[in-house]
Length: 398
Figure 1 (cartoon, rainbow, N blue to C red):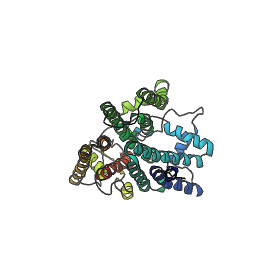
Figure 2 (figure 1 turned 135 degrees about the horizontal axis):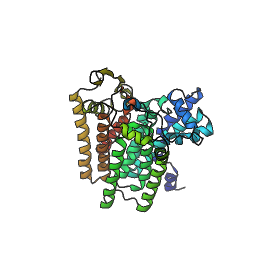
Figure 3 (figure 1 turned 60 degrees about the vertical axis):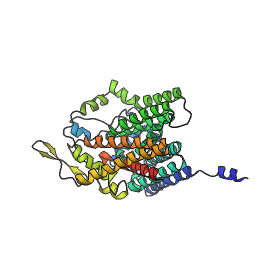
Figure 4 (figure 1 turned 45 degrees about the vertical axis):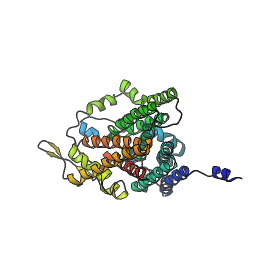
């Protein structure tokens, strides 16, 4: 066998990196099941609705959301895609094993999808860095959350995959758009915290990708536009047909969600919103494990004369927060400048996604209702966003 044949038979570095990054997820799940893990609490409720898939009680919506307390009416997360994804595993392997393995498979799929998209846009180096950051995010979450079906935790790695897919699309690789829209639909349907971030990120990436593709200065991969449009349309229709059926013939949850958007009372505001984003994205310990468990604390609002009042928030002060955000902005600008100097359209596309993500994060935190307080689960997308900023730093330096 020639040296060329030997090299061809070996797994590529991106494949090795992706496999290594998924090992902690698989090990954590197998270990928990060996110890007799059973879904309880929120996991138990999610299991019940997963078991309803393709029965007479088939879910057309996501779970009830605590945003109902601020809205003053019962509302659900927009759609049931999370139940649909977990149902085959539960029906084949049972409520404990199947449910945990389903979550594990979703997280493994997110890591592999991120590595694949990074390979398409940035080659082996980008894929290796993305897989390393995937493993880092898994470490930050801790082993017990790697098979946790609760939406704020289970959507964290898919959110990371979304950022990498958005980077790929923003670089003009529009063939990836169906994947981007599919993951985006999963996130928005599964947890309301993605309501503002995902549409801005996806819309901006698609517009940028179309412009770059027409100019011919982005991805050189072949594209069949009609096929990409048809596939993207099919993905969106299939993803949203169930919530639309509910809107027309059921409870009308989508309409209730739109109406609730104007009736959730006081919002967190820019002052605290900027400090929250800076605490995770712009300042240490960033996206690492100490920050995952300690940067944002859970606070319960009290009733004041003018409405809900939050207790003092343990976050970086205004000056450190602004300094942290200035550094993030400087890094994004540097990505554009260095990308132009190197004629590196990939780096500029990453800068676009980072700018969109940070803007979406600032908008999302500013608009968080404070009727019952704040909690880290309302903003877990900050950790993948922070990891993406780290990716920008590495790509700019390397």
